[in-house]
Image (tube, rainbow over all chains, first blue to last red; front, side, top):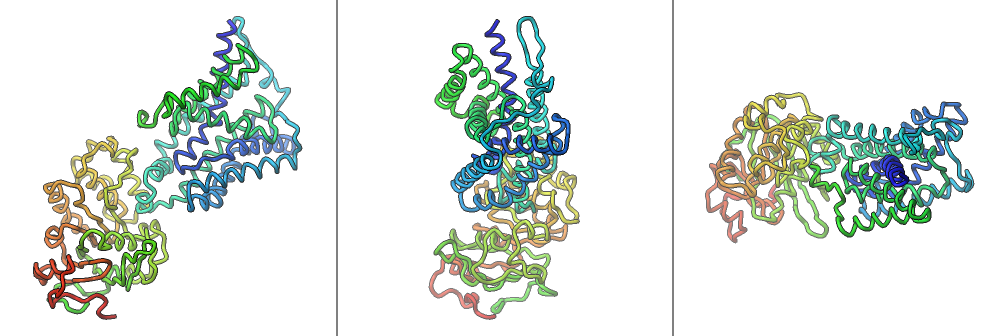
Length: 290
Length: 259
């Protein structure tokens, strides 16, 4: 029974990883930006949520109504300024710039908020409560996070396939020059894509703060790594691949934890390595998707 | 514009597009060396020349994809040299790139929708494109990548028309297409012109260019070697200008001959 439990927990936590991964995948798919500050930005979103909840007395669950737009605006501004500036030079420059951004954010957080870790909404019934099916205990929170991930991916899919800006984002990702000649300013379109990606980052950061604890280093040592693993396992550039990748990663971790609690993270990365070695295009390759 | 063998150009009024003494560098290479031209409304202006003569560079510079080292591009009397390509497109300078360049992960209709996204007011709508190219409607949901070369070229033209351009820049329409397909695509030109359009095209296939153009302009290594109405230039003159043979015919305009 504990194995069944491990698999169910793994699937559910995969939703959290998909929230981390879909923004990373979108930024890479559209702008070819590998955002090494992705995890740190999720942590920033979590800290903003904590601030909003304590200062403005907004219910914990509704903090995203403020944090998501704030992060989306930040995403647009960052893309139009330093990320676009780096892109104009080379793809390698974007790696260095986002790495620098990551270092600055992490140290900034350490400076202002100390190294103490903090959670979001600890004590809420939603966060600590659970229900049981037979002998299996399932936390409410993980179910909500998984459902959120599915809704986010459905929303992204609808946005990209059916909206005017979604269509422009795909066009610009295909051929920047041809899109310019149709009158589209690709820098603005990139900004929109970054805003959407940062919106998902915000949700990921808040969800992680409720699921576990946020510390200034959580961004790089946990969120970014799991996001990368989920993207690579699922297949680069594939939206639903991020959910599949997240689920595979989550299940591998939970099964590893069943064997020995210290093997949890290791098991996830062994699967990650195995996929890289045996199926480097990921479980859902982009060619198969389109 | 000296040395025109006969004055068949519609030189009435002001030119729609003017290029003054354009110099463009690709790194160290001087790709265009002092090119000037004037395109009048309703014209089909063809730029011919061998590979590497600078034809595509000229078109791309007019569209705003390259910045010139010196010289200027005027559109309807206004200097657009400093404008980004998307601003020029919205003002009516629209280009069909060499190699079709459709959005491969978008459907035929989505390609057309992107073309119409920032369109000016004008006669072209997606409905009208479907009426003009009737096969397109039933294949509108197909991925653009699945079309044949000729079909892709037609969609690329349709996508450009949907912006309702005032001047349409066509770069090497015939490249990589079967002759019969090229004939069909050039056969559509009169229909397009009927909607009140000016066309500036680049073509390696000289006989094709001579057939459709009202004015030809030959480039050789970034310089003008011949200019005139197709009826007014002989095959020998064109050959000499195209290949840069010594002793080019007397009717050919020497490069940068006059202000």
